[in-house]
Image (cartoon, rainbow, N blue to C red; front, side, top):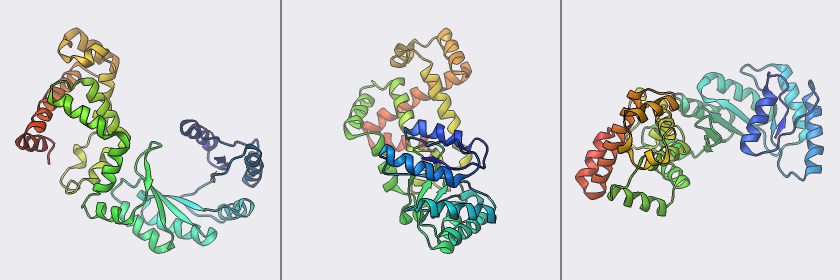
Length: 310
């Protein structure tokens, strides 16, 4: 990745941090004012280093100005890119459409990435930008993490916008975090009362990897509109994870040993309260009981669904 955004404060450092997290090399130049020189230096560095792909991070604007467009056109001439992709904020609505139109006119975009696509304005922005530019939306951002980006499938997104869900994407996300063998082991644990807080922590972390809860709700047929966004508390999931992480291995394997003094220590270690620790333990016991019923009979499955609000 090439740090060619020399306008925004800390833009270079932000790209370096992102590169470290993604384990991708970031080219940073001593040049402070001329992004064209940065791109030219980066091209030579890529040849010497044997890199076959270069991503140039350029300056962006919420309002279009001639100086920016001239700069971007010069960068395009200097780099001769295979792709020119605009990252647009889906939450800016009509502004995103106007910006996309101006950038396409000046640079002949090859595609668009829509960020913050788990917002309520996602549908209008996608339809309008495609209509104005005629260019494909290649990816959408559905979260703040590195895994919060996914390919744009028009038919799937149309289903989400219409509240019909997107089961295919939901299944694909689930398959990325678990496999059939792990699922069978979990089923056996639930059926034999061997499901522990350690297992609950594992499931919480797998759900986190699948994306934000709001984006997952949009994929469940019939859930959108029937589940209030106010009831989706992602911070509670983070608190529960912190609480379980503050427990010892023995405490996770056997929650019955969690007496008052242990619960006070766990609350201090997780930055929560004893009330929240007690709430998690009760929630765990109730969930474990319902899950065990669900593995045995259809009525148990109905009880579990009703508890989940379905």
